[in-house]
Image (tube, rainbow, N blue to C red):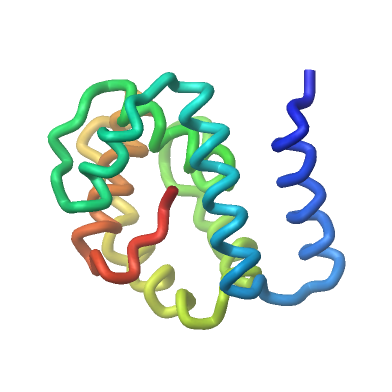
Length: 143
C-alpha cells in the first residue's frame, strides 16, 4: 500500500525529471526531510542515533545502520550487491542543487570502495555514509 508521503516524493521526483531542472535548495531540503521521516518509520531508529551521525559520532546501533540503507535505497543509490550505483548517482546528480555537485562527485570518487562488508546491506550503506560525512562534514546532506 502506498503511503501518502511516498506518493508525494515520487511525484516530486517525477516532476523534476520531466522538467530536467535542478532542485532548489528548498525542494532539496523537503526531499531529504521526507526520506528521513519515511526511513525513521520503516527502521524504527531512535532519531537521537541519526543526530549522533550528523554530529560526527558514528558509534550507532544496527537500526541506525539500516536507516542509512533505507536512505540510500530511497534514492536508488545502491545496487542489489550493495555496491554504490554510479549510474544512478550520475542521474541524481543532475537534479541536485549546483552547490552540491562537486561534493557528490568527489565523495563518489573517494568513497566508492569504502565498505569493508558488502554482505550486509545496512553495514555497507552505513560505511558509505560515514565516508561521505568525513569527506566534508559541512556539506554532508544525507537524511
